[in-house]
Length: 129
Image 1: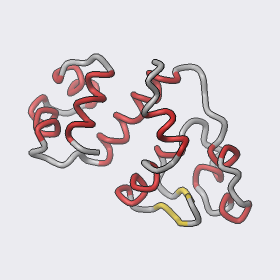
Image 2: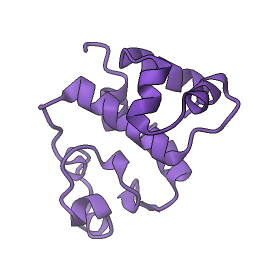
Image 3: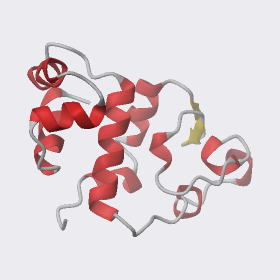
Image 4: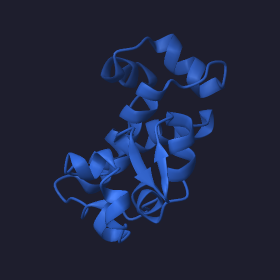
């Protein structure tokens, strides 16, 4: 996640930097550093921001499982953590998923794949909420 995207999501959540720091269990200085691009945004912080955006945009509504939406092959499903654990909600919160025919064990690589996924972009770029 880039610094401008991080700041944009914070603004979408209508949180001050201080409020977001409290919510994420980090310091105000860390939030400022993420938004200024002085520090890389750690995967756990990025994951939580994505979760908060998902909750704000979809709330009580849920997505059909990604493997059904994308009509994943059964052999792919058997290798996917989201399928194995019958994850409710978006698969991008989990490492160990199997997307586009590849195991997604590394967070940065996984997010590259997620950012091109129609399900992810539909939720994260939803302008209607």
